[in-house]
Length: 189
Image 1 (cartoon, rainbow, N blue to C red):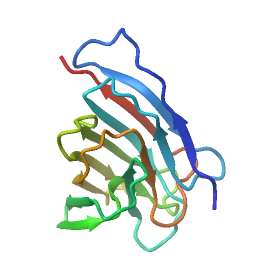
Image 2 (image 1 turned 120 degrees about the vertical axis):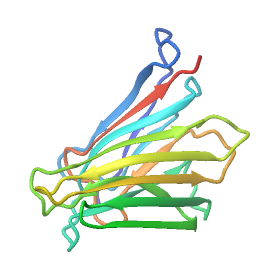
Image 3 (image 1 turned 45 degrees about the horizontal axis):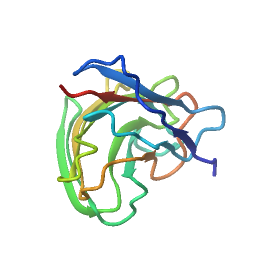
Image 4 (image 1 turned 30 degrees about the vertical axis):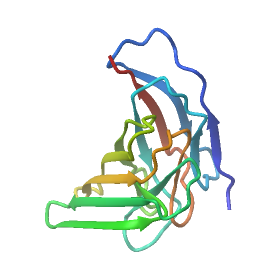
């Protein structure tokens, strides 16, 4: 299995105004893929976090896409919940689960679709607030030559700890080369 990519995060710039998005870190998966990516040492300089990603896995199974998984602060306990509403234009679906060991991350296209990646915008709300559980909302989708899918997802990490690291990984296979993840911080007023 390919080793994970880990990226430490530096302190924020003092040139960011309230409500601005500040680029914190980016990861692009290199040749050979990666088992996961991880943002570590996330500071407390922002109110919310946002991850923007384009993703693909090395998996080549029947379905053309998969949902990546996500964990915070290396927590592997059954402390996560998730919800999903999705649609293809021809059909819709929904699902939910509690007591999970991870929550939903971005969609990812499987390797059978050449030159195609899934796109995701994910908000991690109040990530540093130690008085509440952490909420994630995700808009993600993929086009498969006119037969794609879009999904709105929410996740919950049942911990009052401030988020200091985020790990994103596929359940099977690896993240494919050129998958790209950008982490942003959003300042409050």
